[in-house]
Length: 132
Image 1: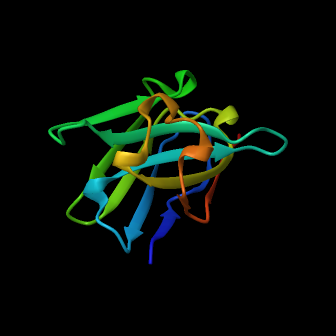
Image 2 (image 1 turned 30 degrees about the horizontal axis):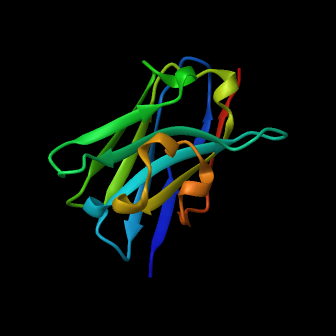
Image 3 (image 1 turned 120 degrees about the vertical axis):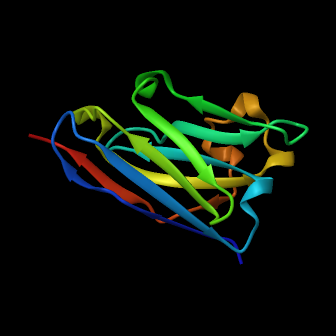
C-alpha cells in the first residue's frame, strides 16, 4: 500500500529555515518521481519542486518553480525512502500547506512536473507559517 507522510512544518520568522520530510512506504523510492506542492488559502495548488530520474536512471533531475529558486533544495535518500525539501530564507508568501506527491517515473512527463494531475499518490500535508 502506497503511503506518503510529510513532517517538519511549523511557525517561523522571515529569513528562517525549515526542512520538510516525506517518508514513503509501500514502494521503492528509486522508481518514482517525487514532487512538493503547496496551497495557500484562496490560492491554487502550486508545484514547488520535483525530483525525477533521467531516462537511463543515471542521474536525478531537479525542478523548481521560479519563486523558490536559490532558496529551496530538494533531495532524496533512497536508502531510507525519504525525500526532503530544505527551505532557506523563508518569506511570508511561502506560508501554505505543503504536500508531497509521487508518480511512477515511467508515467511522468517531465514537461508536466508542476501539474498536480500528473501525480496519483499524495501525503496529508504539513503546515508552514512564516510570520513576524
